[in-house]
Every structure is written in C-alpha cells, then in structure tokens.
Image 1 (cartoon, rainbow, N blue to C red):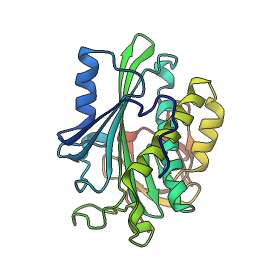
Image 2: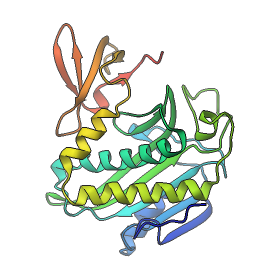
Image 3: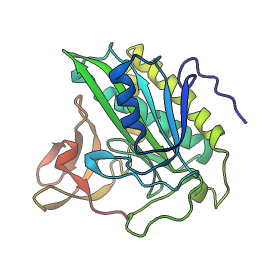
Length: 257
C-alpha cells in the first residue's frame, strides 16, 4: 500500500464512523478554530452529503471515500476562484486515472467520469474576505468499491465497476488522492493558471463532440463543448448562434449515449 507522502494534505485527519456531512463538520471546525492547512475529515457513512446545486451524494457505507479537506488559498483572488475548482477536479482525475488508465474525464464543472458513468463528485465551499478567498472546504465523494446503486441515480459508476468488480484498498486510494491534490494545489499556489486551465480543458467530458443540452426554461439544443472562459463558464459552439457561454445554473446535459 502506498503511504501518504504528501507534505500537508491529509497529515492531520479526523476519522468518523458516521457524520451528516464532512463539509458541514469542516465548516464548523473553521468557525471555532484555525485547523492546519490540509486537515481532512473522513467518514465511513454520510447521510446528508451535498453535490452541486443542492443535489445529494449517496454512497454505500464503508465502500467509498467521503471526505473534506480544509485549505487557505488566500493567494487566489475571488475572480479566479474557479481555478481552485480546476485544480481539485484535476487532482481527483489524476487519482482515478492512476487506477483506471484511459477513459477518465472531467464533466464540467467538477464531476469525474469514467466513460459515461459518474465516479466522483466535488463540492467546494469558499469563505471570502474582500477580494480574496479566506478559506475553502473541499468536499470529495469518490466511488471506490460500491457495485450496486439506487435505481434513481442516472449513471453511477465506481473504480471497482470500471475494473470489472476488482476491489481496491480504500486507504491506498485515499493516499493517492491526497498526493494528487497537494501536487495540483501547489501548482495553483505557484500561479500556473495557464497550464492548469489548458490541462483541465483537454480532459473535459464530451470535448468537441456533439451533445444535447437544456436550458432552465426547457429549451433543448445541440452543441459541442469548446472549453471554458476565465470565470469558469462553459463555452458551447452551436451552428445557429456560434459560441455561447453558460454558468452552472444555466445549462445541463440531457444526452448520454
């Protein structure tokens, strides 16, 4: 098993059998103290986990990674906060790719896919101070050994399913994730925004492939993802309107081949 060779991510870790939400626990910890940067909160069972736009995160107890990490990216202006999303998404991508090889992508803004199945979700909650980020709670749910999912989930997957039901040691996956996150975070701290953005865009799910989308008013259209802009909006090229820019609440995929 690979040890956690990160310098600070996951060096301090609070482990629980059950928690409503690791992000909530981390936020409460921040409200009354200043934990060391890289402090992680992990639980075997979480019953009130959240994803993007209020969606839930459902994970079988003891089979997956459900954790949150506390960071202090005060070097990052608020206007560039999506760069943190990119660094974290790439870290989870790096971890998944280590175990799965080809087929891993990032579904904008920060879900991790293997082929057409969702294997990980990320929820980042920032506390802002003026024009900079004061603190961040990085919530990550990574499906590792779960093989059976509720019927209402549209396209769930896991590392184990991608590996034809081979089980992985959770601690080994966790250590790999901590190392990947530290590497990407340090690149962000060093100001390597262009390289992070370029790599992130190269890994996007359905990049430059025809796909079907829907706006909140129910209008569906076809387009092809071109990348993202500086603020993190998705750029979709359509034959009728050319390039269009969408925020997370303005667009959703409705076609998974």
